[in-house]
Length: 410
Image (cartoon, rainbow, N blue to C red; front, top):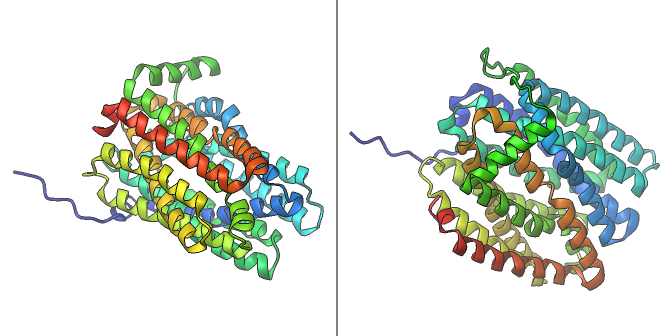
């Protein structure tokens, strides 16, 4: 007797798992404020300095702590209760956002203050993200993990659509400071949701390890290096983080200097990217159990470079927005599928550490890509920079998937 065909329902996992439902709604509401702050931070950096390179530096400051501290944070998370760690980090985010609001509202913000507060946010994320990523499997089960990861990313990108649109209105009507103030208030939603989650005894207990931090890190590296598929995936993550993610860092510069748009136009471009990413997340969440992940990963990876190339040369806001929709879908597919493939293979005792390695590579490569993109944008122009990175990504992706056919069959 064959199993019944699975219907397309991207929200099934929300109906089935109460804990994940609470987490998803609270996190998504909070992320709306986070994206308001993300958009406003980049625009504020551009207003303060009028320098594409400094916009890149501010983007790098938010992710540099990932490169330095995610691995030790992963070891710490494997020895801690993940839910408690996530709750504490969210409380700290409230303080950071409130401080940023006060400096901007009072007129005391400088580029140095902005960079410092962005670094603080990055430090908090270095500890919070590995714990949050490894918490998801405790809120669902292994069979629904791919769907939950995709839907979690869908919430992230739904917020990416709503947040910038609200930010554009708030900046125009109230001023940029209030984007940071609203973000501080938005953390109340996730704190309430987390307080209502009930995980059965023994599921989220601290891991027992006699290893030092360095021994724990070496153990995670050895595991990833010893698994051929994991080792390939982590290098693909590095490639796409280095060449693909800086398109978001350079987006305010592309909007203002290449497409002649204001803050509202920049917000619309961010919404376009978020819309594409949301569509990609819903498709994967609805079909995660039957999806030929290797094939979709191949297509999304090659498509991302090609869409970036077209976006870089486009002078039409409409075409640029359309290409950002494609970029969002492709980047979402790449991210969610690799995340799901990795989490389905790793042992639970190493989960936070391996996810910390994923975070280190995926987010930690942003400072390098953002700083390089910012320098090239200042020297040769932002359009040439985005076009060049898209071309490199397209060629590199084609070569990688040709060299490793097992990726296509994953």
